[in-house]
Every structure is written in C-alpha cells, then in structure tokens.
Amino acid sequence: MYSPEVEKALESAGAHIGDIIRIQRGSEVYEGILLPRSEYGDPSCIVIKLSSGYNIGVKYTPGTVIKRLRKAAEVGKFPAKKAERKPSLPPVSLIATGGTIGSRVDYVTGGVYMCVKPEELLYLTPELEDAVYIERMRSPFLVASEDLTPDDWKEIAEIAAKELNTDVRGVVITHGTDTMHYTSAALSFMLRNLSKPVALVGAQRSPDRGSFDGAMNLLCAAHYAARSDIAEVAIVMHGESSDTYCYAIRGTKARKMHTSRRDTFRPINDLPLARVWPDGRIEALNTKYRKRGSSEVYADTAFEKRVAIVKA
Ligand code: ASP
Image 1 (cartoon, rainbow, N blue to C red):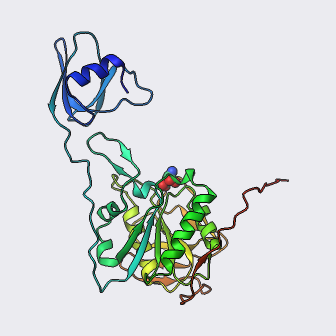
Image 2 (tube, rainbow, N blue to C red):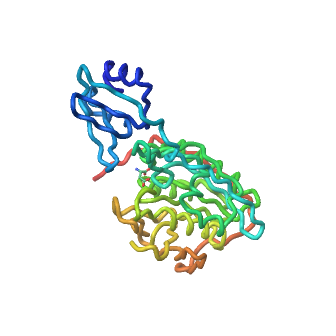
C-alpha cells in the first residue's frame, strides 16, 4: 500500500497496479507500468517500470499529476492448457504442492507468483504432452517447501496412495527443493506395499530464467513415473549441471547439497537408482531396487512429532 495521499491520487486517476501511467511533476514526466510498493519502500514514492525495464520511484508531492494511459495488459496471464488425451501415451497422475517449479513471473508487475494452477505446468514443459498423458492433476496446497509440516506429508501420502491405486502408471509430485528430501523420506516410509514409481521433482532456477531446470526435471520425472520398473519413491532432478540427464535418487538416501546448482541432489551412501534421459531412456544404475507389481498401496501416516535429538 502506498500512503493515503498517493492511494487517493491513484484512485482519482483510475490507475491500478499493472496499468501504464504518466506522472508529471513540474517539468519532469515519467511513464511506465504502475507497480506495487515494495515492502520497505517509501510509501510516498510511486514505483513504475520504465520501458527500459528499470524500476524507479517518483516522489509524490503536492501538484504531481497522475494520468492513466492504458489499462493493464493481459500479457502476464498464462492460459491454462488442458492436456489432450492421447491413448498411446502412458497415464500418470500429478500432485502439485508448490515450490519454484510451480512459480511464474508476472511480466506486467515483475512480481513472482509461486501459486499457479497445475495445468500451467504444461506451459512450462510443453514436451510433457508428447511423453505422458496427465490423467489427473491434484493440488492439496501450493506452498514453499520450507513451510511444509508432517501433516502435509500425510496429506500427500494419502492422495498419492489413492492415485497409485487407479490405472495410472505412476505419480509425479512437484515440490520445492529445500525440504524435498524430507518429504521423499517420509513418503518412502508412509507409502506401504508400493507397486509403482513415485517421482518427486522441483526446480533450482525459476521458469523466467534461461537456466530453468524444471522443464527437463519434470520431463524426466514423468518418464520415471510412466516408464521405469522401479516401484520406489525417488527424487528426479538434474544429474549434472548441463541439460543432459537426470538421476532418480532413492527417497531415503537423497540430500540437497547446494543452494543454486542444478545438480544439487546427490545420493548419500548409495548409488542413484537410475539415469533418466529426457528422451525417455532409463538406465538402471543400482541393481537392488523394488520392482513394479500389482499390490494395492496404502498410506500408513502414523507419525510421532514429539521427538528430540540429543547431540553428544
Ligand atoms: N524455497 C523454495 C522451496 O523449497 C525453493 C525451491 O522451490 O527450490 O519451496
């Protein structure tokens, strides 16, 4: 929120966030997209994005004239792309829980919105449409993974178990990377009689960046869920920093090693379960794994939260 004087001036000009406005202060004239005030910004400075891309603050003083030039464009909106049913493609279920992989930049205001509709993931990774058929998309919540609690793991486990007992080949769960390895460990214990693959996937870089890793990760995660014969919970993320292949790492053995590297997840005291290529090839790297089967999966979500660690 801007100061009451600025809010009043914007209101009488009919200017809303995202609109293109002109601010005239004496002989100075500025034009740009009206942005929300940043959290620590001066409330009497109106922030606009210039056509050069730079954001500036213009101090509102008595006599400043604001004019709305154009209404907000719709360019920041992603159309929700519906998956087309392709009977030849293996069906998978997708559970979207949040994190960078589900974030997008609003190009009108420049703000980042993490919570998007799951269908919008198809816009981030159009190749997915030719790799698998997304039978269902579920989204119990959309949060940054640092805000997840064990109750959320239970909810994900219950939804995943339900999905696994349908005719899908496997389940893909989009998730923030910060606590993905905790969720993968929790799900590994909670999903009992697991008979199909479950892939957890995220992104280290956001979709507005050229180095976005989420598209290849999502594609490989979908291949792991649909095409592998490994009935285990795995984290499927970049195996090296280039866009070459992903590793599927056993859910109980994965660890995030770096804040920004694309190949941040590594197996600890274990080999990766498999190397997954974006073209769908899957190379098993670990001879010991649980094989696909037909048993009914159930979620055992009993969880004791009152546990202390005593370090000696
Ligand atoms: N803080 C974010 C999260 O874990 C980072 C990410 O998505 O990678 O949700």
